[in-house]
Image (cartoon, rainbow, N blue to C red; front, side, top):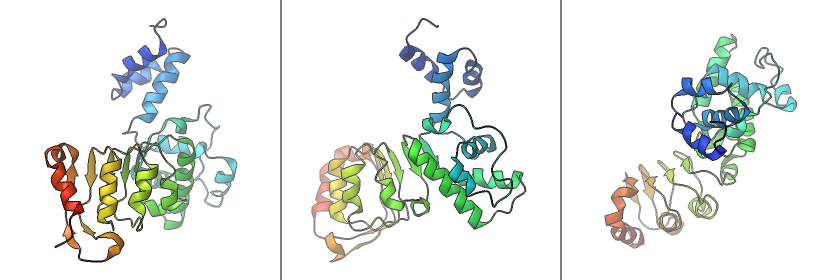
Length: 255
């Protein structure tokens, strides 16, 4: 298959993207195959960030300044050379498995699992990933990110974002519509959102799924009556025939 165009090879290998053993066997064939396969392996949405082998690579890829911040905690930084390839460039998903990976790494190195070391490692790894990755999925506690909510708005490649239980502020939804134009899946569960913001969000983005369950949705400025405990988990496939009803709901005064 060496004479096939790279795009053809990429499409062929994508058919095996969940067959990890087959993909790993292709890594050593030649440089072209390696470059294609390693990208598929590392941008797979289900990449196990809780695997200690992945954790070792992520820690080795920290720069010297970042590693220095971990010197006080013995054995946190793994021994070994820095990988020749920066695998973090291919990662497209950051989720809570990162927390699990940090815990497993601390356990295997017989280190105390404290909030201090957990938060420091997560901050350094997340910051490194946000700088290098072209993220599509972000499912972590926003308040634990180095730059918080404002940093999320800079990740314009996102198409799946979980903002559950995080107060994005009175203009949060408007900011999303202006910056995160690639979003397809958005969770705003247990948030403080306004009717005007929801209406603009629906009109501006071509979302496939929007979760606004467990919300008290107020009118603009927070005045007037509130839909207490409104629980809506909305799939866009169910909205097509009810679109006008939803627009009417979000446009109507609260009873």
